[in-house]
Length: 162
Image (tube, rainbow, N blue to C red; front, side):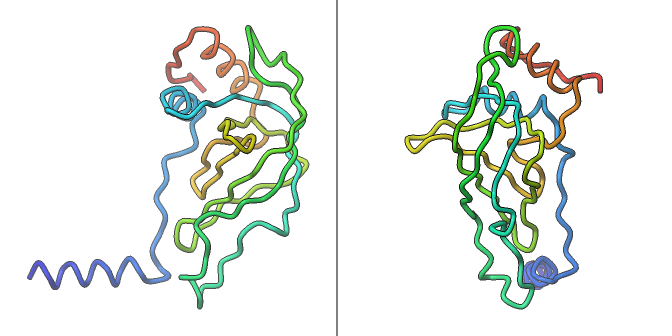
């Protein structure tokens, strides 16, 4: 019985009708995840530019060929979070990692205001986006930006009221 249930579950998970279940994107959760990570992160608010044609596309007939990671050169121009706010000029090439989970892939739009939690790597800065959001927020509200700045100032981040 257990084996039959396992096989049924695997078949159900492999079918195109399966759904991706994500928690709603949350700037507090993302801030805390970056703050607690062993990797170093910086927070930047700016305009993200990249070649949208390089985003991964899913061929449902060849699902197994969908890459988990698609690295795309990008440019982020804006300000990084220091002191009391987004005060340090930032104009850097970054790598956008558009991740896929099965048939679902991260999406993003070029020439968009973006709040980015960038991982500092040996090769520069990396922005990880996934189908559930990841480490970036397109068109963040003023409340989101103020909340992240307050979290940075306080060195702690409590859930936001918005």
